[in-house]
Image (spheres, rainbow, N blue to C red):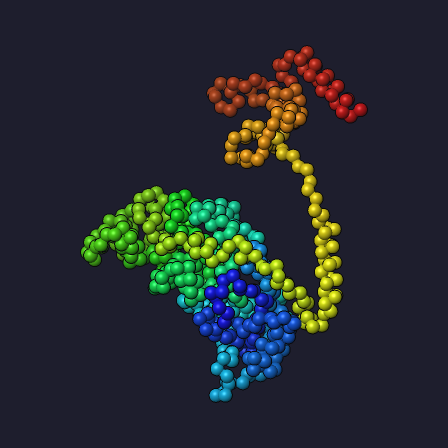
Length: 538
């Protein structure tokens, strides 16, 4: 295993994983020390292709007769914003014969494969703590059971560091804008900027590779590296961050959990609501969405301990019963999540701000471990460049240079380095279906507010040059007055109603009639509009 303490010198190489299965759909797993069960995998060394690495891995597993069913997943991962992608490729391989059992002469460091029924792998994913390094074995075995006849469809996926955290999710669960706002407010309250998120992301993939999930054992190793003391409470913190109860965290769940635990994160508004959801999972030990009375009692006890108040069992029982009144929770009852959030949000129950807090901020530790420069791939390191099915030794280096030069030239021609000239829009308007302009705001009205930065200087020259634009959005201009008159001409106005129902107090007018107007003023307006139209069109 690579030394996880070598923070800034970690390189992320491409990996090949193999979903080995037999005719009875038993799948091969390897138990990796201190990490858990996962698919057999091997790092691609320079000069090897995906296929040759897969064959080498199978030889290491003493698998001699097999049928390659093809690639079932290609995942590109960017471990940090300024780091290159690395690729994880998963092959499906059908094993045609039993593998050799390890003998007494077999080296102790040789990888041994365990054969587990696909249905059993599906069942084991519900165990806690999760026995797998990540949930990929269960996901891929499910895919295998659904497609027993080859070829299994191939998925092409990408995890891009430039994708905002608010936009990260699963394809079946698109992100909701309101949820995006909550995430942004949480990160802002915790002072988790882009650099801090990038550092956590780099750590996440450094600890979890080749998986994209962090199980409980890996989580405990990671947070103790941040300065937290090893304790049984780390399992509770892991459960609180495990939003979807997978038994393994995604990067998004980890960074939001760390942000929620920051000592400086506010306990009100949207960040407070997200913290309360974490607190609820912290005490919901069976993850059923219900806090039992005994779990509620433990939460009350922890709050009193954080306040420095010591109680005996009888006093704690009495205080718990008094606190339960705020939630309409009878003794021995159950507390759902929504009622917990409602009571805490209405300040009927106090003290939760003390819970789910990191013993110290992780921000100084992250900044000490990583600087912005250390998260950037060194320029002296030459990027790998080879076709997935062709080794580097089969490629002429001059041809490689020619390809690189042509790619660079093509990029230069397609994306010329030109800076265009742009102007600020001077008005913000809303247009109703009827064509009526509403909420007209001039750019000059926004000066001195947070809507304009200090660098946006608006002088009188700009104001003078935009006079035609200002006239266009002036509700009292001749053109807009005429538009208002035309709308009046088109619509009928309901007659007066003495009972006071809608229409009362309005002038009676038929549709497509001018009603009672000054005919001479109307004629002058029509003539002026005709002259302007003639100047424009002829």
